[in-house]
Length: 406
Length: 142
Ligand code: SF4
Ligand code: SF4
Image (cartoon, rainbow over all chains, first blue to last red):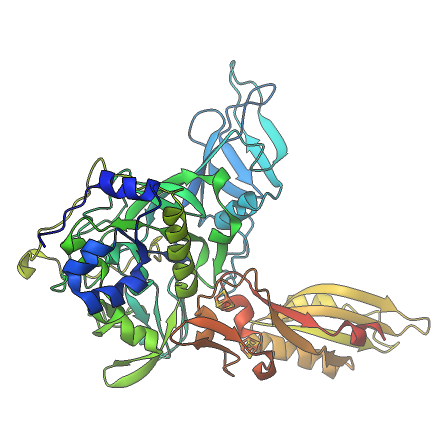
């Protein structure tokens, strides 16, 4: 048998005919191990992935409809959470990490951050009424200076989830070398390496199954928040030039995705408002990316298991900047890792159970013919296969601003 | 940060004193009163949730006892809202008794209430606030 080559059109024809063979990234591990990449590529048409974790760089564009008299809303609050109104008259952007205006923040440490943008998004998707307040300076064409109304997602003329940085391809494993508990976007870290927190779904994670972004680009149709959405661009901080293993998997945080979809079609189960003790509010987002098995290389990529994926153990207490070591996701998932000869308990922040559920839902959608693959119309910055290590950065991103936790 | 549901019982002699105000002012505590009652013979009973940092909390409770307030804590129990729990595992970092633990290799996060000591550490550590404190209201009603 010759080399396998499938086009997006061919795979979509099979999906329409209900004949596509679809497996999850977890199932693909065994298939590739057992049958090899050639046979796996012949048999399998699509591999589905999934991830469910707090992703801070998320938010929603909303148009709340013109009022009478009309207003050019400058300052806007949704359930007392400030939104950005510096757009056209009744357009706004609500970010996931914005706390309610009167939140005590970290005044008594660690703050609890009970309600913020992510919670508003969850409430909207749940169909709950949300209080909208807007203020304006008033113009001849928009004389109204103040509106207050209660809205539901149904009432809103337009609501689009648009997340500038999600689905991080790999992320650090966080520990704390200091003598006190610290509260970070990687969760609570107990002193003297009391625990090691990590936050990707490993072998199920979208970009760990497409390490060079070969099939994930502008126009890739995805599972987003329980509905169909799209990848629209590479995300902020997308950095393909990190050191990689021979299988192409980056050893540290690398690629990211910007994703978009109609909030009205989404489900509350897959967009959960979260409160990270001592850190802030966020939104846990469910994302699943289907990966077409165009050829043997894609079969090899999607066959990666937790043993084949590594990440760096990083200190988050500013005690040591160099990574403390490299661990595999198999080790992380086992419940404990060895760091400097010491056993440290590992704690996931990303839900493996939900990631698997997403991969299975996406599988069902594709098998039932209700979800067709979107062929990328534009590709994202990447690196050559086997790029020499000296061209790669050793830098491990520790982002203390508003990072995603994909 | 410590938060407890307390029943405070006051005798006639101290019922008029600004006890709660003192707790807030001198011990940096915040409170949420759930029930307050002055009985015919002028004894008082207050059910409140008192919160603040650990040292302040204990100093505040000591102050209450010193001036003659009877302080009881209400039996508390923890339950998990299965709708809200998204099975991440973050809570397993802090649960001291192992009531919250991960079943491998499935990675399901289990909650065994029999092993729970109601320490409440998981309540604020759970990102989706799936762990909920319930308390025996009967004690507060007598
Ligand atoms: S931290 Fe909360 S959501 Fe995560 S597993 Fe524990 S109870 Fe469930
Ligand atoms: S209350 Fe304490 S013992 Fe009980 S589940 Fe939560 S952390 Fe564990």
